[in-house]
Amino acid sequence: MTNIGDFVTEQDVFIIYDDINNSIKGGKNTKMEENQVYRMPLIGDPAPAFEAVTTQGKIKFPEDYKGKWVILFSHPADFTPVCTTEFMTFASMADEFKALNTELIGLSVDSLYAHIAWLRKIQDIEWKGMKDIEVKFPLIEDIRMDVSNKYGMIQSQSNTQAVRAVFVIDPKAIVRTILYYPASTGRNFDEIKRIILALQKADKDNVATPANWQPGEDTIVPTAGSCGVAKERMESQDEDNYCLDWFLCFKKEK
Ligand code: BEZ
Image 1 (cartoon, rainbow, N blue to C red):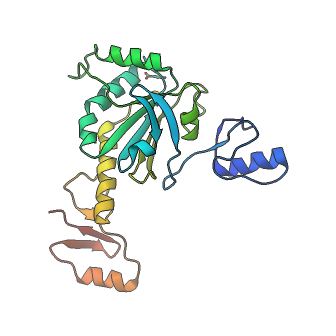
Image 2 (cartoon, helix red, strand yellow; image 1 turned 90 degrees about the vertical axis):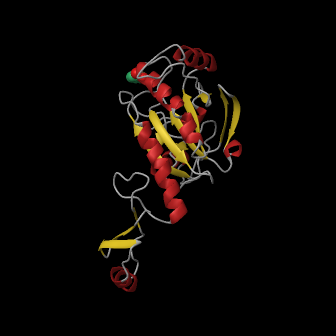
Image 3 (spheres, rainbow, N blue to C red; image 1 turned 60 degrees about the vertical axis):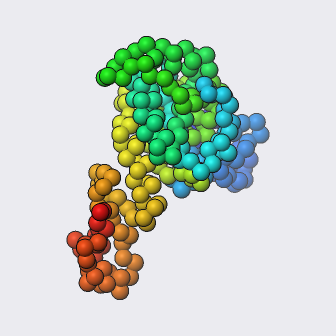
C-alpha cells in the first residue's frame, strides 16, 4: 500500500492514479487533489526546485546557486552523535568545497531553532582535532518535509527522519550523483569531494575516471564506438594515450 506523500517510483505513480481515478495519468511530481505524490529525482534529471528557510536565511534553489556545483545533503536529526561528527567534518572542509565552486546545503526534519541551538553547541565540541567549528553553510528547516519528500529523503527507516542522502547537483541544476546511507553510518566526506573532482574532470576533459581514481592519475577515454576507432586507438598509442585493450584506453595525466 502506498500512502500519500510516500516516496514512490514513476511506475507507482501510474498505479496510484490508475487506482484512484481509474485512468492513467502519472508523470513527474504529478499533483493529486490535495496532496503531492513524489517521484525520486534520478541521475540526469533536473534537481527539484524549492524555497526554504535556513540557518543562513531564505534560499531559493536553483536560482540562488546558478553556475555553482551544489551538495544537498540530509541528516536524520539535530543533537545526534553521528550527525554531529558529520557536521564537524563537513564544516571543516567547507573552504575546500568552496575552492571547487561547490556550495553545501544541509537539511533535516527539525525546526530552525533546533538547528541554531545544535550548531551553537557544535562550536563547543572538540573531536579529532576539530574545534571551534562554525557551520557557515545553510541548514534547511524542513519540519513540513517539503524538500525531503521532493528528494526521496524520507524512506522506510523512519516517517519522521531523513536518511543520510547526498545529491551532487551540477551548475546547470542537473542531478549528477546520488548517495544514500543509513542512519548508523557516517559519510566519507573525502569520497564526496572525490566525486566532485571526478565529475569536474570528466566534464572538462571528456574522460571517465577509473576505480579509486584520485586527482593526478590517468583517466579513461570514452570507449571506441566503431571498429575503425578501435583499430585506430590500438595503432596510434603514444606518450599521451595507451590502451590495455581496444575497449580500455587511458589518457596520461601530466
Ligand atoms: C546519529 O546521528 O547518531 C543517529 C541519528 C539517527 C539515528 C541513529 C543515529
